[in-house]
Length: 137
Image (cartoon, rainbow, N blue to C red; front, side, top):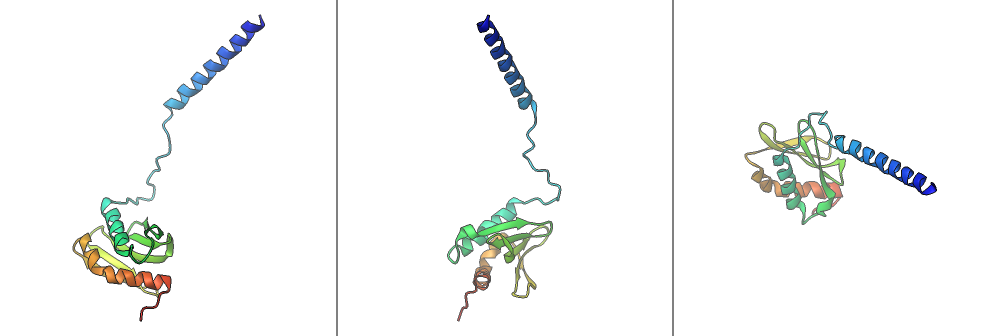
């Protein structure tokens, strides 16, 4: 009699566990974020990020270079700090590389293609030196 009661309890517990697993399996996971802001990071922006990262890898640890996408531009940052902007890429209509000076004034350089980023390698290195406080004589 005790054995039958234990068996019934075990069967009941197992059935409840199976029902719970079946219910969990039918739920749609909500881990995919909904793009509420309208910001879409494109492959072209990611490609530009990796180009800038490769240009600067001799000057700085590439792990320190990150990005943040915004509606109108794609920012490439040092130490994931928006006060340490290396450059901005405007790739929505015409393509531009923009750098900020020490007074946060933006200067834009037109790009015909992303490959033109390599033409501005010296400028990007100057920005890194300024952000790092390195004086070039």
